[in-house]
Length: 286
Length: 71
Image 1: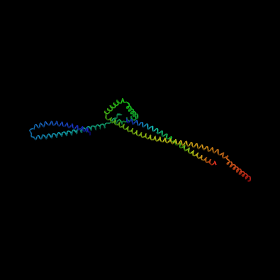
Image 2: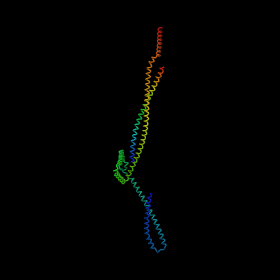
Image 3: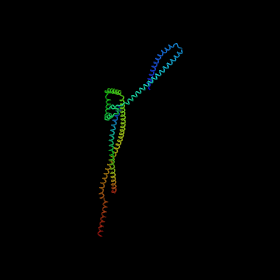
């Protein structure tokens, strides 16, 4: 219960009290002449009757107070009843709204609302990305065109007011639409996050590949240098081998001509001739 | 407007991701080629080393022959 409503209730209570007082005063005014009449009739009675009158005044005051309390309690009861009645009326209207079978604003059939319409879903699937592009273009046009914006906004406002005034079921449809938009927005955020993760992974693998390529290029350079060195050393060795061969070829005739070898060959030839002579003599003797 | 900004950012990120994917594939191909080149060079080096060893052996043999023949 707010302070404003409390003050309002108090104000109403004060007004009611004032009204009741006025009524009581009116009654008193009515009574007073009666009393005066009674008093005028019974003026000749004893003093005891005057005391009784005082008691009657006291009783009338108490009765007035009781009346006031009763009326106030009635007022409170009525007020509670009116409040409860208004609440019940609201509840019944809501129930009626709930029980009303919804109509589709897309195909016009009963039993479902526009976001649940199959025709609309099929259309949305067909349009697909084209709708997104159109929305983008609309947003861009809204940003760019300032002259036509004011008229358009006024028309939109009027349309919105009319829509709000015509029926409450459309608001539920708009709520569904907003829910769909929110769902799409969150789905888009999820997709964005996934794509961001994939992109970061790709970036990391790209950097890794860069490092690998650098290392492999260095290794290839190193191997090429080693290869060149080995080829040069092989060429050198082949040259030296050729030189040795040529040396060997040139050295063998020199050996044949050298004096030590000649002496050896002469000695061997003499001995061989001696042996051949001895063999022929032995054959002749035999 | 936030939704459209998000869509724009999503599209830009998608473009970058596709570029990264392409460069990644290109680098994979480069790595494969370089690995093949390294293997080839290593084989060539091994062959050269073996031929060098043979030549050195023959050189030693010639030298020893020369040493024995010289006295």
